[in-house]
Image (cartoon, rainbow, N blue to C red):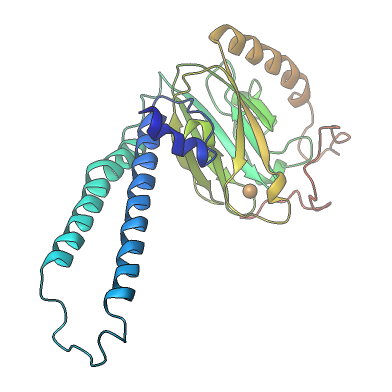
Length: 285
Ligand SMILES: [Cu+2]
């Protein structure tokens, strides 16, 4: 398997850090080796044909064509291998990702709201309930439009750019977008899903290694797309609880105040995403 894994390294894949990722890696490895074999095979066939049927040796065209069945057998084997790859591996793996979600109680549910050019994360806080969100409440200090009057939202945690998750626990990320189509891509978790305005698209994964991983946007979403990166920190359960506590303390102060319509407080000096248009906190929709 080590020799096979080389091709993933060559492709620039970061090491896998999720429970299902090795299956994706196997398919990637196999497909690339298979495509390599096809490339060499078809190239050799092409060169053979160029020489074998050169004009000098065959001044007159042969209208009968191929008489042996070898090309039929070759093509049939290629189709067969491709069918096995697709029906035997790719489709079942994909079906498992989209149909067999972990039970809600066991999993950590997080709402991921993409925008040009960053990812916002919404966690339900200790009460386990997501507060109501509304476009009307969106402001610089309230990027997700959390309703300040909804008691369920009082303890909610909203972060931008960095998400923490505990190791060895399934994470369900519900993806949506405030403006254009983005793609929440976690290369080390071998998972990606489009974030589409007006849709809620769930993806899930189980991190199996602690550490810091990259989150990138996988859809060309505008001029600042190149800078649309974030961080996924996989914590031990203790570290995760500590992070939750810290975030809860931070957001508890920030979200308890402004009544609707009140002038929003001075924008937080959080690192602004590049090239964000100055006056467009209004999400599409
Ligand atoms: Cu994007």
